[in-house]
Image (cartoon, rainbow, N blue to C red; front, top):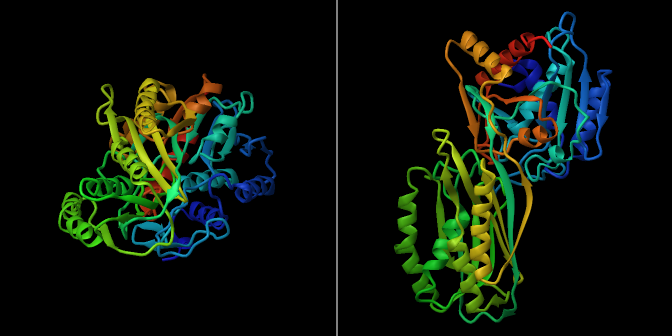
Length: 481
């Protein structure tokens, strides 16, 4: 089945057009121009603010002029991840999509349904001529995935809407009323190099499913950097390990799926045999249920590069073994909600230069800093430098707001079951926008998406139909001013 044959046609048409435009985070020039041109082609007032957010305004349809005004909001950028055997350039190519039963997925890359389906939905509302709605402001933000700089750069007074509908969640039976804040923790150090004294070994971790470092952090998925750290640590007792290079993971908001280390050890064959018959087998057994595709390859190799000293290598390995990864604390107030977590997202050691990227999340600001400071403490003990950056606030739930009650009522009547009113452990832009628009009611919802931030990402077709029907009903029943 082609995407053009899927209902609702208008959303999948716009999603296909959007996905033809490259839109990596921090490289949104092409998609900004695309959305700006889209708004102007409809004859609607369209502006681009100084950071790159696009705002398109559409007046109320007849009879809806006295209703509360709405901001429809989604972000333009997407997480760019691909399988290692896929040749694809996110800077120049459009996403290649296919229909797989009830799902739409990409061919070996992230799909961009996060948050492209939200963008396509807003485009569909803007170009419609038969959907009742109040005064609308469509807000398309940039750089949500790697810094929230679009939301952070949105100035007070640019929006006049009274209710914000954020279309950026991934379960169609949830109404989201709160989210976690986050902070980037970057660990660095530069080391002197020397000749490798032993034999060269290559350790490779691959086949993990990855996922969203907030929404999936509690699911027990494997983290390639953490698994690599365990394997390296096991070699310290008997071997004189020297690190030559490490290349693990990618973006801060994606659970890392692959990692490779090149090391020098004194007795390579003995080292390989012990790891293969010992810890490797144990790790594969640990993850057999949740990570059936996990592969660990440990083999002899060659390298002409120099290595870190044994002492410096030990410091790096001990830090990698010590960094907290995964859930740090569950919420005592909201059942089954992760309050605080950390993702050891990227480890890179090249030419003696070390960089470790983390993303710490929490719905409680003090606990967010507690986990970040723990990472800082262990790293500074090893003589490394630590920088905090990109901090953004969480979004405090307001379960009794008028828009939440309205959406609960509509959902229950329309789908004959109650929705789940929740807070999530992802970084939504609502908390940041709310800081400048404290009187604006906010809620987030969306169609069902699986595997966001990984090449396994897929969007559910029946769920998108359900979401589209729900949104139209909400717009038609927005209360009076």
